[in-house]
Amino acid sequence: MFGEYSIADAMFAPIALRFEGYNIPLEGLAQAYVQNVLAHPSVVAWIEAGKLEREVIAEAEI
Image 1 (cartoon, rainbow, N blue to C red):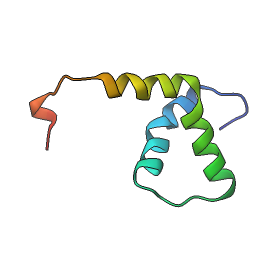
Image 2 (image 1 turned 135 degrees about the vertical axis):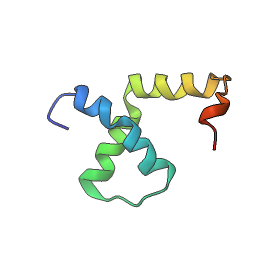
Image 3 (image 1 turned 180 degrees about the horizontal axis):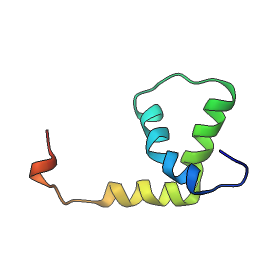
Image 4 (image 1 turned 90 degrees about the horizontal axis):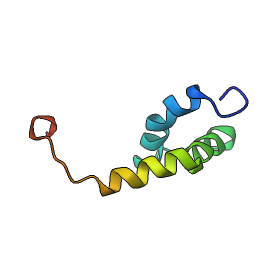
């Protein structure tokens, strides 16, 4: 977001996931930025760890 990958980019990762998950069309730099955030090794590891999560908190379910 501001040059090298930083905490600002990490904080944007959940928003990038929403753009991707809801298939919101992006172009140019916005699309490239979201794809770069989602391809970052830490974000990839976070997504993979989430896929392995099996705990369900009933109160948080809608």
